[in-house]
Length: 226
Ligand code: NI
Ligand code: MN
Image (tube, rainbow, N blue to C red; front, top):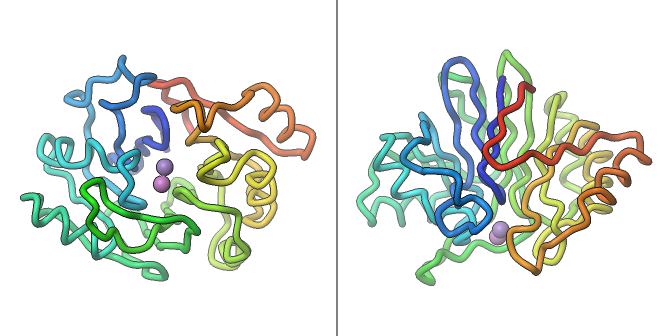
């Protein structure tokens, strides 16, 4: 399994010859100017919630790639109305097996309005279970006790958590989340994109280390094996 980071909370997972793209927000991201969205491959696009910084490039990448877009009911309907018909609606608590593995949708404590003011349903996180490993991407969220349920459902190899504070968990709560989900390998996202969420990266990595955990902060465009 591989992960490629495209900045902010956008990343792609390659598993079983399939590419799963999450929360595409690239062209408006000043830090991700090196990424050409036309070069991005995707078989699936997963949208955690309706905010601009998670959906900005979803329509253009869906058109380029013909990927199946998986999102909550409200975002699925919104995309259908925008001409994107290859969508699959899910909602929190639901499981669905695809050709790469199984997705389960989790609670996220956040909001989800769409860029044009449409109602975006509830924000969500994703558990991705595959024969090459199990991941949790929390989406934008506060720390919440429901995270403790995740280790009853699966054993995680990696988790992708926001660490930028202000709109989501910050570093200290992400460390607590790591304990709640019983996964010490964390990839940090949702930081430094805007002044509101600027962080001290070295301090963040050191705090995780002091807690006996690993925080990986990827370069934009970088790919690593998980
Ligand atoms: Ni958000
Ligand atoms: Mn966000």
